[in-house]
Length: 295
Image (cartoon, rainbow, N blue to C red; front, side):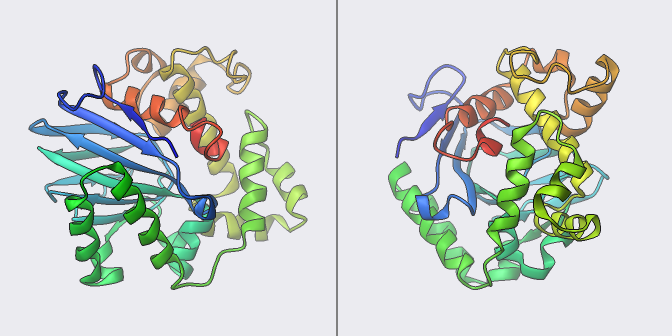
């Protein structure tokens, strides 16, 4: 499988910032959105990250913090599990720094966290509290890995190990919700209820458990981040089939500011991190779910 590298002026390793994305092995495609590696050879990392799916993130140096939408602050750990977020998150770290991580699809998140899946929305936890000292072995293996191929093997095997400990989530439901989110630029909740054949109350309960948000909030989140990603790539909302997804310009600005942490004007001049993240995910098109590559 090919890797995708983004940096301010190339991928020769001489720049202060580099970001690599690569897809999971086929057997993990419904559990993991993508793996990533970040090299930061700068004194300080301080970025606003958009509302996102859960993350499992390992850092070579645990000096930094995450500030969630409600102001809650969590100090970065060597291995941090970050729950699904309902708004943009400020992330800081001290460099030089290496970050190894992967995003979790809803089925993977629920399988990992079990009955606690919906209790970490806009929150994070120390992975050592869940896995004990064993996680240190994984951290050291990733830090000592010589190249992306080694990191890819370690990452995929690590996910297989942690997911086999719990009961698998029902992928029929997450497939239905993912299809609902990607089929329309502005998903409507009654359509999801009809597609599942369940009551609205059951749909809301399961969506909160697997995605961390209600169906209505989930639709708002993905509509906004899709629009933000399109603008960051230099596309128009019309070309991304999102021209009618917002009531007016003020509605667009409010939604993007909440979920992407930036206004349309700011996204027209994205930071190096936002630009690299957006480009890297788009380059995964055809290798991962559209829910990942289009947002």
